[in-house]
Figure 1 (tube, protein in one colour):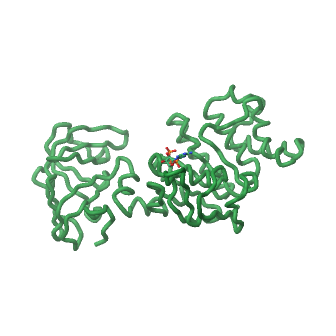
Figure 2 (spheres, rainbow, N blue to C red):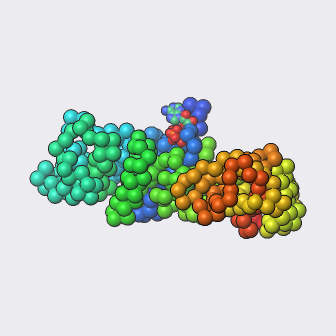
Length: 353
Ligand code: ATP
């Protein structure tokens, strides 16, 4: 177990600045997820921590040891890759044993550890099979088993679930969380999937263009995104954004007018509202007038898309409140009191009123 600290870490590939000088402190035992759109530098950051990429400048510490120039094998980390990277000619048991044997352990001594890891991942019955005789989900369990067989100071995960189907992803996500809680080992996990980031992380790090845009507890980021980028990236369906003029508690835009905004701002602003905070009623005169375009049923709730003048507004509506709402219906759209986010039109930064 160890903390991981990045100090002004930068990575340039020729003229491309993949990571632009980031500072990051990952406390001992925490599950940290680096998340962001494709090309934001998250994999490069992880690979620099692993020692698979050199840093252009800056330094990396694991515990109090400066590992910036150490080989991966000397950093005491275990990494799980997207493509599993199992040894095809070795059995499951041999794959799990490999990192221990490579460090000089004796085959008989480690058998109990292999059995323990296999049991924890429900793959005990597969120990004699070769990787090609396993499903994708089983292969991923073996890859995780290989990473946890040793007790490294840090686990690194590079999109480990992205080759699995949707159902298996959710199952493995829960298992990873359970394992990490049990092992309490510092873990750094890269994904482009914000839902995976929200559910797995103790600390979520949202990256964009080689920089950290926001870092914190997932629910804090969800509640208080620092800018429109983070606001729209985190949450699904994504936050609605409406540009208009705020005067006291009245917000007027080409989309319509609402009058219950709590703000002392008098500006041209962008207001953001999460779909679950959009209120739809049959009263057209109440709020922004629109017409329901599509209702997508999701079991306990539905996604309702309303076309208001020039813009589509997405709402998440609980089943109990869906009664009477039908596609084509003229409705009034309101924004739940106290739930509106306000951003600058100029640079998208959050404005606190
Ligand atoms: P993805 O989710 O698509 O993997 P990412 O956020 O992990 O994206 P990185 O793989 O870290 O992004 O890449 C960051 C930037 O660095 C991108 O612009 C990418 O094209 C560039 N890059 C990455 N590896 C190299 C390389 N070996 N040579 C040149 N440019 C690279």
